Image (cartoon, rainbow, N blue to C red; front, side):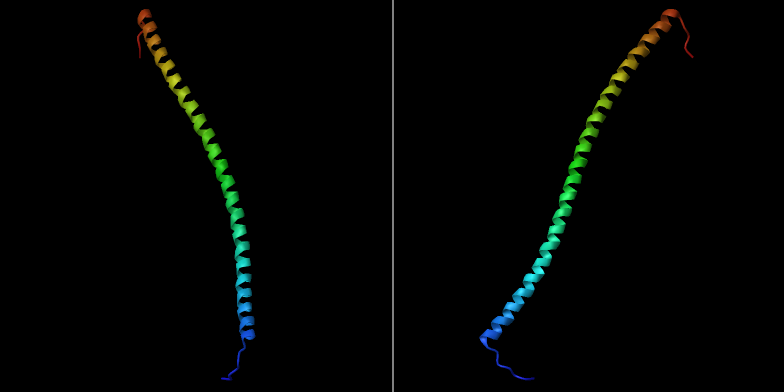
Length: 94
């Protein structure tokens, strides 16, 4: 192996090249993180839309549930009234 005397200036140049290489790698990492951030922004927007849609669905289902309960109440009342009319008219049930 050939021995070569390295000056402080040579050493400084080598260290600077190393730092430049690391800095270039970080630039690439930064660009990739920018892409990830953009994707997360898109995901956040989609989740906000899903949450909004779920709220609408819950509200609609609540209204359907209420309407169904009211329909059952009315049906029960109608059955009682029909039974009464059948009894008054002496109609036989099947």
